[in-house]
Amino acid sequence: MSNNFSESEERQELRKAVARLAGKYGREWFTEKARAGEKTTELWLEIGKNGYLGINIPEEYGGGGGGIGDIAAVCEELAAQGCPLLLMVVSPAICGTIISKYGTEEQKQRWLPGICDGTATMAFAITEPDAGTNTHNITTTARRDGDEWVLNGRKIYISGVDEADNVLVVARAEDARTGKVKPVLFVVPTDAAGFEFKHIPMEIVSPELQFQVFIDDVRLPSDAIVGDEDGGLAQLFSGLNPERIMAASFSTGLARYALGKATSYAKERVVFKDAIGSHQAVAHPLAQVHIETEMARLMTQKAAALFDAGDEFGAGEAANMAKYAAAEAACNAADAAVQTHGGNGITQEYGVAGLLVATRAGRIAPVSREMILNFVAMHSLGLPKSY
Image: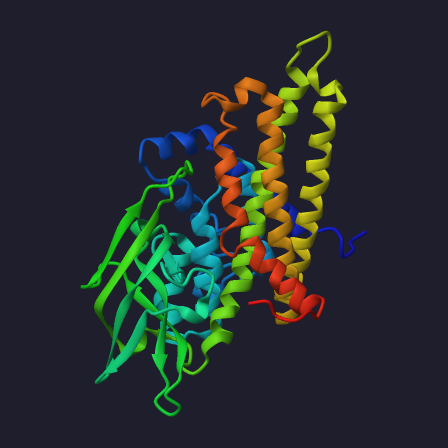
């Protein structure tokens, strides 16, 4: 019997298929690529070829015609096999959603097929060095010059710019009528004159790199703008709910991977007379993490269902809660996995210590846990705004 608390058979089959595909590659392969400074393009293109990469994008543009819940399931299963792909969050989920929703027919034809098959990945640039979480403070500006736009600004912690053909950039433009500035979205080719990027060395072991981006007098044609230039925040936020849902799936996938490593070790490792998993001090933290992970997964599915049903506000509330819960579960899972392994937990050989930094990032990005608590306090509880 199907009910609202279990996924459809199609979704469950999708999960199995993605897990099988990612399992052929696995964590060791992923880590080797990262440490050698190589890319995971092979896996990315295989996901695309099988139709999983653009599963949330309309069929007429090469996608699967599914919802955000489908692409989130793909993201989670990849991470659960030890191959968390950050660009899944960015390219199909944020950029794919915004372009599918607000792009012109010509823009959809131009950009969506490459997002779906993985051959033309699109990055997303919103965060700035001086604005941080405060999106209203972004200073990247767009001004009209004849029938062109000229962009200037700086962005930071932009994932995978080196692997992307284009970047969806959030800038501010002045409204000709009111003189007020509003957010506007532009697709910028990564090889455009005046567009440069510099690698930021991170402690996270991942083939997907972070960059600082410099935008100096980048000229764009008028059709580089996505959506109505007066649509502003609504268009931007249509990509941020999927981002939080995907971030939650990314975290629950990592939590499942860490928990899997820990439980199999706890079943085999004998120190006194029995396997260490028979000791409650080892077993209980793992059981607790399993509960937290399952709760976060359920909230993520709720957020995806609300988003796919068109309930923007309900989805926003649930997506924030899911992202918060998933990041906490993942951090606790990585910590418990290291502790279960004892000294082995800190070695490269056992491959769990790297998860500490990878999962910890979830408490900060794409939105900090503090800002989520602000959101819940204000919108769910009706408390006065604190910032």
